[in-house]
Image (tube, rainbow, N blue to C red; front, side, top):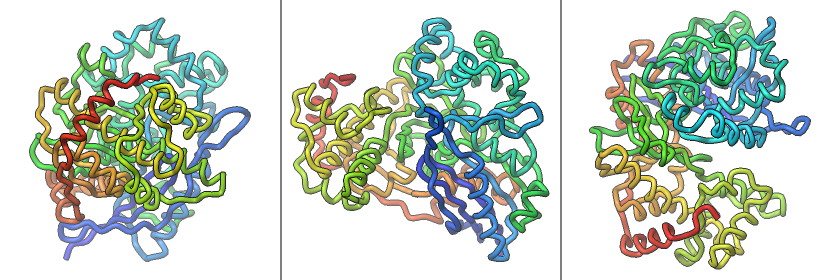
Length: 492
């Protein structure tokens, strides 16, 4: 019996986990050894990530692995994209990194599109326009804190920075680099044109390495802190969605994926980037995937709406978990209220419930008034947005999508999965829930030559994890709702 162990440090916008993966005769088993809360820290009027605290929590998890008497072959960190750490002047950390929801980039974003032009930016990067992208964050640093950028001799996105702390190798892994809107997918390098246009110093931009690159052994100080020594630090897909898509248990090329969580990322896997005017006008994105693939996708708001509503209800003394909210939503009548989840007003509202109420009133719909009604509104609206997005995706790629694979934490929501199948009128396959960690772990296995290829990786996923199937129901009624959804004043 052959057996190998790997550690995935998987960071999300709400929590971080250290997950031990054990590969035995072609099957992967997971053990969550440590979980911790991860959220924005409000500091002097800004939103920041406590990156030092995150690093310490990850080491706590690695120590727990060591306490089991396990010496993992590999270790890797994945995280969300766009945010970054500045290093320089002999310091490993110049300032706590900003949180992508910090509104500091709103004016910078608009000004940059006016000055540089969306056509020029998209032609260089093929990346969806979002005010939180790295390019606009760095421009805000340039405009408001020029001394900070003068001190910095390098920036690293979050997972790359933590991989650096673990290994001492300051590299930018390609899937994470591609989220910055400063990476050119056609030349597979940083966009020197945009770097010069924005007035950034080229030496700040680290070497880009492929997914699955071995960075080196665990740093001596980390070995001392954790009790683990003979472990390779690997840049897998440092971007969490890149890792999740690698773990989609699909075969063929007639499928799409939906990485479902705080954000919903829906797309297809292409052999190369699709950069043209139609993709730009529809605001689709080309992000690097494993093994030279391109994740052509749309990044839309996901369960963020419900997460924010839950936080409001908790502050008011009403604590409801997601299972309870799904049960309440199922008891409500269909299509009472619909919203466009991707409308700008839902990105940073002071009150999510009030933002939803205002939208419904402005579009002459009854406003939700109970948690069940809010949850039903959000689930149905998300499913209809999935259907709309998938249709546009087929038009842009001229690819026929016959099935949708939903992975990530949102794939546990059976009601939303069924609504998605109804809205897209295709079979939905839900799972695995831990796709990001699984992709992280199994790309390590490829890097260490324990698995041969991406196809073999997906075969391991299919043989190791249960996948649930959802067939479309009530499709006539959902088609009527889709028309009503399309006719809404969507940006209200």
